[in-house]
Length: 157
Image (cartoon, rainbow, N blue to C red):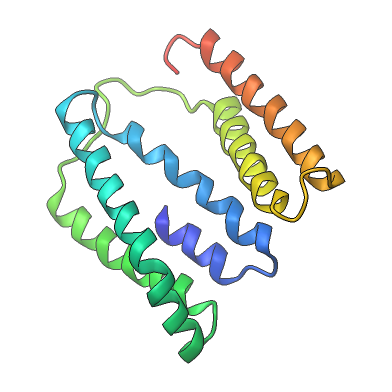
């Protein structure tokens, strides 16, 4: 998933194209069981997020100066490939005991809502009353409310 997000950013033509795909990263938490394992994974994720915030601007600036702004995204794709290979070799299979159906409405509304919200916040830095910011904020509210209603009614969200 990280590699897909990175390749989307590497091919982006505008600022919203680089922001919206990162919304999908938040979904990783649900791949860990509740309890100590999820707490450890969340702590590791938080540490890596902190390292990214501290080192990301420095490394990405150096890469952008030397190889262009898309190079940081290509580095993400490379890292994702290496980490995916390592994970496939080292991590245990994490399939559920019973096969569940794909939650298509939830899988569409949550990422779309978070993407709309993130894009609205990013564009809002240039002015919160812009029509695009207002439309995206409203769209985010509708989509996230729909996601909540959809998941509240499902037996196994």
